[in-house]
Image (cartoon, rainbow, N blue to C red; front, side, top):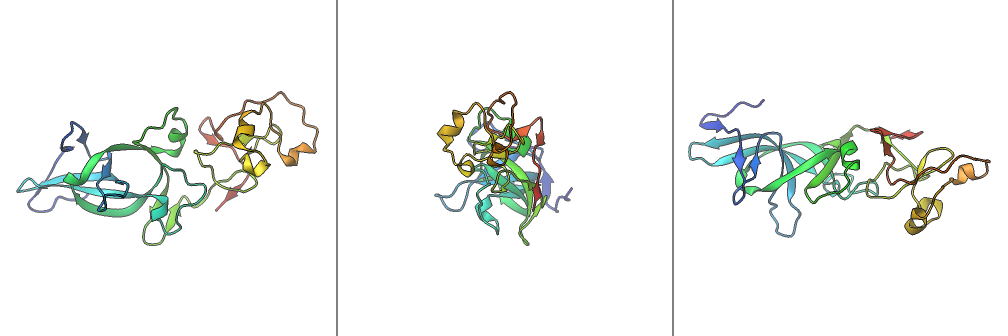
Length: 215
């Protein structure tokens, strides 16, 4: 834990101005951006401290949005996806606009309703080098892309792998009407099994089901 500098004192909490919301170390917050037409910054509060004039500061660890990373936003990045960076900073507590929740990827996929304050993180990000941890994730479908929780996927009743409707020559509407789906690789094989229920997520029982791993 970082030491408090001379003339500073640690605070257990901070109440966001104009609200009754209390922020503590470890909480995730929305912080006012420098430009009014920009989405709020997201950060994790590491420490709260005040000086002798009662000016409150927060030490934060920034979350990056995919478009803020060196690689930019890619097809598999969800709309609410964030990267926990190693970029540390000190900001005035007055710039905190509200609180939010950054879920683990697994927990986010279990949400029945995603609220505006819900985000998720599955990667840590090295701001200086653009490196990600972990550097390997499960991939799906013919396109061999990581799972985007915003996208519908269908499971093949034969091989049990997951596919995007577009990669299988279907529209989303057509995919939603399916009672049974067999991928092109399995279509030439006589697969006779009871139909499986269509689901929108390849995350089952907390485990990612895939046959391939890719950087």
